[in-house]
Length: 276
Ligand SMILES: [Zn+2]
Ligand SMILES: [Zn+2]
Image (tube, rainbow, N blue to C red; front, top):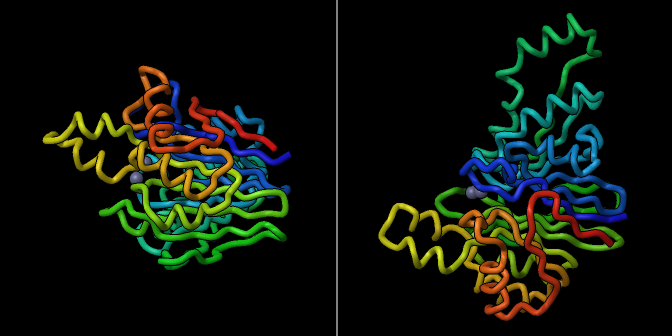
């Protein structure tokens, strides 16, 4: 079975119902985790995918809400018997963060090896790539390939989206970005597009406040509906809801539909899943 699971639909504002940003993609037998915000390990456990079973972690950008669960993920894999973790990340702050993720845990690792008899220490391999202006392959496992492209989340650079292709489908995960032609082109014909979303009504309501800058570097829901329609997306899955959807998902769905998207549209809580 292939599936996409939202392991976290939240944003930096804490919410007991929403883990930090993350998407699990299981495609043709390869398990890929895109980003690892707070609570990722708990959500993966809830999704019945043991964290030790992941094949690779893909990071989109250096924002804490996408990264604070990474050490937990790597250490929990180790305790679960998977000593090695491969992390794919754009070169720069994100790849540097990933390379150092175990450094503050040196003493804990040493004590667990001595005291609990762990067989060897955890290791991280960072596959760093220059964030590309046009889609470029950055990782593969058998017939499953991962392609990345730079997106528009300025001033946070680099920031990338990923496309995962396999014999039985294709999934694109936007990371954090404004609606942009790069993601639209990357997602052309994809079966599933997981995209962050920000209500236009929210952006209009916060003009002149310090939230204006935050609203500006996220994806306008109406524009997203138009872009997803042009890209011919089968399933559009919304995540990273801004503002938090305390009034339900209808405002997000309504704005995306207003933009013209007519395909299957999914807006839901953590562990929302698309299978095929
Ligand atoms: Zn974010
Ligand atoms: Zn961000």
